Image (cartoon, rainbow, N blue to C red):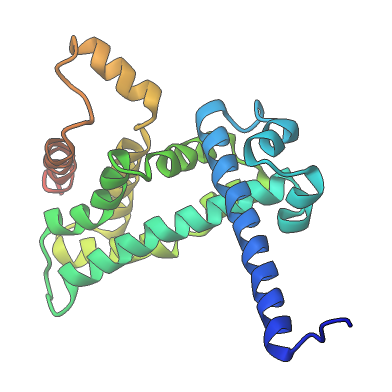
Length: 223
């Protein structure tokens, strides 16, 4: 006699299927992020990805639509995470302060990415760095036009430096961002070679202090 399926068993099956789908989606995401970060976007084929994730092409297409869709999904999640951390720190250092310290504002901008350099999110940071130069049209459009998170830093820096025009603050923030984006694995390998091994990103607190010394000086000189 066939066993009748109960509502509880049916619900359990649905839940299990949903968990499996979510697990597959996340596995594809993480393997793609790792491969893209290490090898570059153009050098990773869909075959490379399906082999690494242990899935077929249909699974990638089902969850992300295409390789470009997968790239965009990774970029959006990691950029959102990074900018959320920055926004939280910025709120902490500016809330209730009519003229916050420049160094504290810059620390809110710089600290999250510096943390990512030396923890389990290193791959995510490498991916974001590659995305700036190798991203598809949709990623480039976001980079060029989605600047709301940066406007918050401009506003805070204007409060901190009332003698500087908004235009001047934007220029100096632009140069600060250039320093932050110059942090690929190749950049640090060159640094290691140039310093005969004395300078590496492994000392995260030392790296952060030097970045803040350098960028703060750029904001606090001239008018």
